[in-house]
Image 1 (cartoon, rainbow, N blue to C red):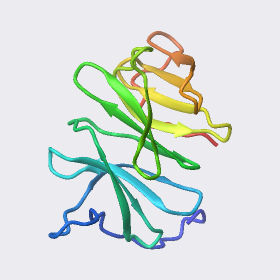
Image 2: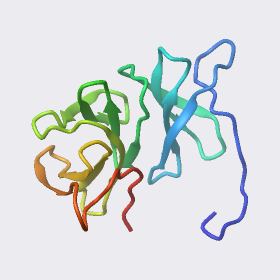
Image 3: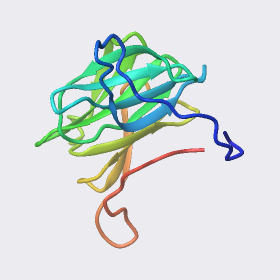
Image 4: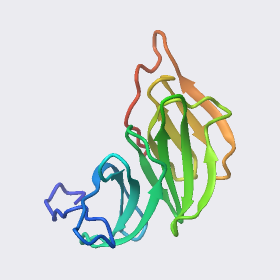
Length: 165
């Protein structure tokens, strides 16, 4: 809880699996309804986002492009934002809650290794790029706004997690 009280834990079981396969979590986000959105992998050939109820029951799954790198996730209203890092470039995918792809961001701006993402109260998407050493900022319509950071004195060095208040 926000008061640092232990509430519960649960296994990240994939929905609709016979053996109760587990999702190995990379990142987590909480939506306005209190559902937990977890991004991760099951084995090395399956990446997914799974929505769980607040008591840990899997509700739905979004299959993702396979990568051996970590994913980040943020949820704002009905949009699920997921980072994806491949060997030669990275992407940011925006999905509807139902799993349909809304848009893909990042290639034009040269995102390379997006690890984590957050969305602020105004709907601005902030993506930390570990290799480019900066933060890319987009609006919910997918328009690139600006980036900040980079190498050098008083700049970012290997940014990872990101949040806003």
